[in-house]
Length: 183
Image 1: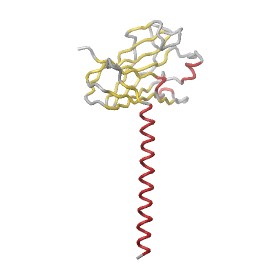
Image 2: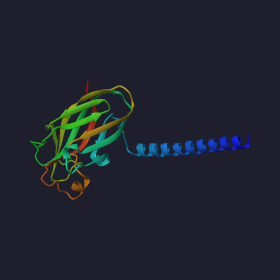
Image 3: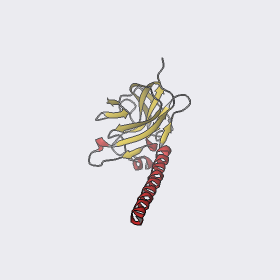
């Protein structure tokens, strides 16, 4: 009888320890995810800068370079999706392969072209232009956290930006923006 009592108490103790530890880990993960979230601005714009992304670089296959964000959508509606690039040539972005952009269940694949050029932008090095490319539009029905992913050889490592050189590459991705669509 005493043996059964100790077995049950030991089992209860193990369950209690495991449940307490798993709650601590999930809180820690929630805090990390919360720190990496990009929040929607008051005007409805969501700006996902490459500096704030989790980036993965593959030296052997740069076309699989990836940037990922978690964005918080507080207003549902139709959004235009824009890709911003830093470029030295304001007439040709020189993308060799298409860019894959995923926002939850929506996938866009595009070879970016210049739709508008921003001179003297603080988002790019001084000798570069900021070029915005329209990717498409999507309707976001539910508010909440959305995962966004960009896959392209133009997702370049941060150390290239810090030394001011893009080597032979004249173009790199700077950000992805979602703006409320005009009716």
